Image 1 (tube, helix red, strand yellow):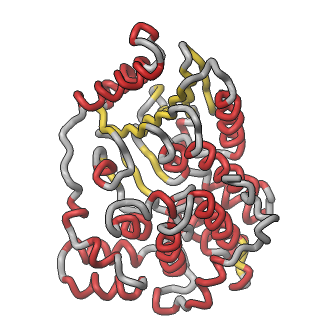
Image 2 (tube, rainbow, N blue to C red; image 1 turned 30 degrees about the vertical axis):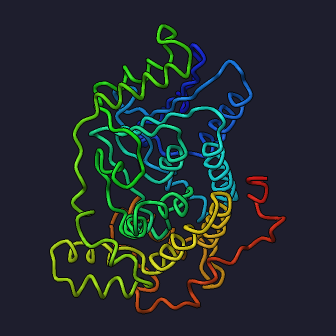
Image 3 (tube, one colour; image 1 turned 45 degrees about the vertical axis):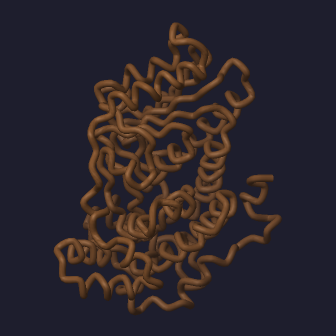
Length: 368
C-alpha cells in the first residue's frame, strides 16, 4: 500500500497521507516522497494549487498526522543509524518548502495533528480544522522539544500562549486553534469532502475563483467557537516569566485548580527539555523561519547526541522518553536530571551551540 497518494485534477494537485494504522506518522520515505511531489508541482504550470489531507481506517479524513515515527527514532538512535540524521534534515527542508511554496497550499487538519503534522500544515495558505481536530506539540513529554518550525510559529501565538503550548503540550480541540492563530477556518467534518472537491471543480471557475468559493463556504458554514478555557486563565503573566523555576513557583502560589493541573502536567515532563524549550521559543520569536529551522536542527542533533552531558543513544533524554511512551509503554521515564532545580545553565546552553560551521550546516542554504 502506498503511504502517499497523489493526483492532479483540473489544475489541483491533491495529496492524501495513507498510513492510517500509524495515524499517518511520517517515515523518511514519506518525507522524501512529499518533497519530490511538491517540487515537481512547484515547477508544473498545470498545477495551480495543492491540497493535503490525512486518512483513517475508514478512508480519507479522520486523522491528519500524528508526527514523526518515534519508534523509528528509538530504533535508529540505539543502532547509531545515520538515517535518523537524514530524517530531520529532510523533514525541516520539507517544512521550509511548504512555508515558501509559491502556489496556494491548503491543509485539511481533521483529527490528530501533532508534531510533524504541524510541520505539514502551519505553512499552509489556508489551514482548516474541524470539530474532530486534536492539535498539540507534546514533545517535552518524550524528552524532546517542539520542532518542525515550532520555535517560529508558536512564538508568534498571542501573548505568551506559545510558551504555554510548547511547555505543556496543551491539546487544542476543534476551533481552539483559531484562538491562537494556528488555524484559519473551522469546518464541519461532514462537509470536508465537499470543500475538498470544490477546488477541483471547473464549473466554479478558475483556481482563484475556486479558492474564493472555498473561503466563502468555510466562513458561512463555520460552527460556533468559543475561547478555550485555558486562555481564560493567567497564561500570559505566568508564562512570560524568565525561567522554568519561576513559572513553577507562580503556579504553586496561585492556588487554583487550573494552576495545580498545569503544574502536575509540567512535573511529568523532562525537566531538561522544559528549560531548553523555553529558551527555544524565546529565541525563535526573534528569528526568521530559516534561522529557526537551523537552530532546531542543532537542537535535535544535541537531543540524540548529547555529547556535552556524555549521553547518546539509549542514555539520551529523548530515547528514554520514547522508550517510556511507545516502546515499553510503562509511562515512567527516568529523567536526568530528575527535577527542574537540578538543571543548570551549563546543561542547557550547549544545546544552542551548532555542531556545524555556518557553511557546513545541513540547512545552510535555506532562504538563499
